[in-house]
Image (cartoon, rainbow, N blue to C red):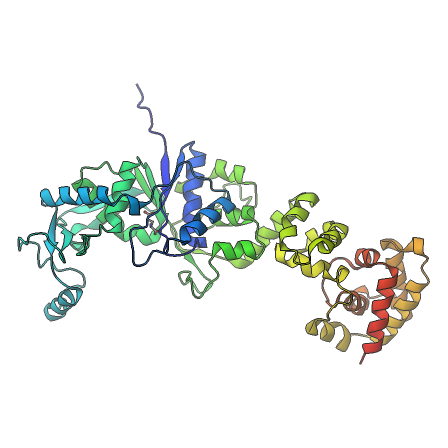
Length: 475
Ligand code: GLU
């Protein structure tokens, strides 16, 4: 009989030392995709073992952002800070078995000895055979085998192994009695029945320690690991919280859609076989395989993220677009009404939801503020600007109230361009040039939704009013 494969169980195990950032989001997503693809479970565990560095209030941020991304977990997440007794018991067992030994060396002592002997950095095994009794101020170090290799199957990296002689006798319990992250991490994976450990590449070097520790505790090792590629910036440097935009919450607040973020993150180090990159998450779940993830560092490209975001915005229904954009409108109900009147046009043009309000603001304010750069571009550097403004006023005033719709407005402005002599060799109006001053007059900006629709919505009186105001301000 074929053995029944054990169901897949993976976990995302954040430490609350920082906000959820795009790198940790990438690891969380890989776990979630793998679980959903294989019909397994996606568990969450809070690794808050570092009392000095942890900021418990950040757990909220992590949970909230996972939820925002749609990466729903399947358990009530355990917190390692509440499981300390279990790790202490495990440490006691290791001590009784001689797998760990007490050590009273300070960091300075170790460094001084290494310097003197010219040996390699890291712990030199000084206390390994001293037979110290455990006690306050004495750490417990793992007695790493001097020979052999420790390795694993990595779904992303293939077979990976380290010479045991290169692994120092690492600390398992601190001198103050606090169990180290590594012990809690490996203990809990076994305790939770984790089958695949999927995490960032920064954990590759500690994986042999994890395996040695697990074996010493008699724990079953996971079936496989997958160490996801490092995310880097355009300088090929590891993303940094200080230098780069990495906070997931910031992306949400800057108007990125969760489905765009998830789609884009999935593409970092991975691509679907059919090459279709922007697609619904259900299709990504179907196609995602860790074996297809590339181990090379992946460039977190904000331009590509914006592109994916724009695509996802355009894929929304108009109603949904309005609904998603509404929380980003600071000007309340009038802004929502303005957006309703130009939603289709705006939806075509924005890359993020924060770009929505500036596009419709001209409909809400009494007189738009003129943007410096737009003024320079369309007015200072414009062609026959006073003539164009005057001709536009005249042509638009000649339109009857019932003609105040996009097509007649367009015809009138084209005519005005001809009147002002803004034409090409064939006598055709040069619209790209002619439109500039009109757009700046009505919206204060040189970019925005299509002009004819904008004027139609703004109304005859307000449009002509604004053109007259500009006429009075021309240089
Ligand atoms: N708590 C670790 C971290 O936040 C994750 C460890 C793991 O996934 O095994 O980096």
